[in-house]
Amino acid sequence: MFEWSEEHLMVRDAVRRFVDEEVRPRREELEFGDTPPYDLLRQLYRTFGMDALARDGFTQRIARAKAAAAAPADAPPPAEKPERGGGAMFMLPIIELCRCSPGMVTALGVSVGLTSAAIVSKGTIEQQERWALDLLTLDKIGAWAITEPGSGSDAFGSMASTARRDGDEFVLNGSKTFITNGPYADTIVFICKLDEGNPPRDRRILNFVLERGDPGLEQSKPLRKMGMHSSPTGQLFVTDVRVGADRLLGGLASLDAPGAGREGAKATFTQERTGVAAMALGIVERCLELSVRYAKDRVQFGRPIGEYQLIQLKLAKMEVARLNINNLVFRTIEMAEAGVPMSLAEASASKLYSAQAAMDVALEAVQLFGGNGYMAEFEVEQLCRDAKVLQIYAGTDEIQTSQIARSLLSG
Image (cartoon, rainbow, N blue to C red; front, side, top):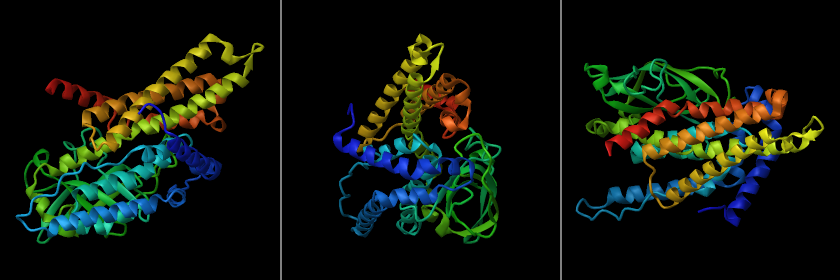
């Protein structure tokens, strides 16, 4: 794949019209007014039938899972079919939303992507039916809670949240921070360690599902932050929350699979990092579009600034970054549609380059606009603030670098 097809361009243009007509007029409201993005996201889903597609896909998946579970023990296993998804029709809305409001993509991706993926990949059939479908259709909002105030990049080693067995129940305690959708989430995947009296670093990682209103669960108000204001971020406080085994993803059988919790979280990190290239592409495309327009219209010293070589250099570097990120997105699409999973190291490499390039382009756009670039009404100010977090969440640039290097050295 080296360019968008006519069908892709039709979808892109339709989503772009939706963004221009429904999202862009509310940009300031989203950016400065503490307006949650969920109603707009649901409108997007309804407009393009994404909720119906999600419902049909989920129904088929559950039917296959139930058929496999009902098959005789000595029946040959069904032929493995690679999971396909995350192709162009998934990437295009991400790119277009990020041209206006990247935070909306973060809120969307954590709910229908990370949270539902954790439940679908690790949950029993009953758990999937109970929680996953409502997340996939945006009827419910999800949060994936792993980061803690004292952990950061050392997500597993410094994790202090615990689950303690008490008869047929588990008692959960701990706190989480920087949780996307945390203030408004209906369904939360809470990641913690099983306290069996052993040293904290040796404890097993478990995934529990918490629901809004559970006694002992407190969801903070949205945190104030540098960018991504259209993506609500909050803290979670879990104090003696009692849950049954039905809330443990995979049920009690998951206790017999040591390491599964860590591997599941790593798979979620891979998924999260893979999507950053599409987000970066939307930011870069919009910064370049605005910068070219401004370079043609802005006159200084009697000439449009686009005639000056230093400005041309900035624009050329932006275009090189756009082309490179675009190629990474195309590669991601082709792998997804072929059912070939991206390795954690490759996802890290894609995220590292895309995030850095988006930040570089956004900073250059602000510089090109001069004083106007520092003003909110010219958009590049917002895109610059939003781009920065791509270098931080889902693992910092430093963590991506370490992951890539470890993969190379272990080969």
